[in-house]
Amino acid sequence: MLAALSRLVGSECDVVGTVADGAAALRAAHRLTPDVVILDIFMPVMDGFTAGRQLKIELPQTRMIYVTGDPDEGSREDARRIGASALIAKASVGTRLLEEIRNAMANNTQGNESLSSLPATEDDVL
Image 1 (cartoon, one colour):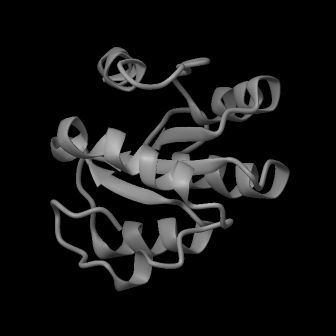
Image 2: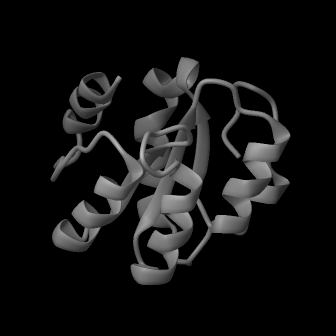
């Protein structure tokens, strides 16, 4: 999944790094200071939500997009509270990820205030 996401994102964006766990994501974010970080909710060592909370404290300007195999209302709400720009079902990543990266980059706020107004279905982003 990591290689596929990197290829997809690399078609339009500069991919400055890839990591396989949440703790490594935090270390890499500090070193690379990316505009957008894509996190899986379920990662080894440190889950994506824990990493995201820490990332928002330490690098609040960094935008986050979560991907997950099974988005449910609980994970959508957690992503909203953290200040993520989007949560995308892995089944929809191919069609939605680049669009959500563009949306996150266009949004200059800490979190996307429009997230709570979007529908919460499996194929929709936050």
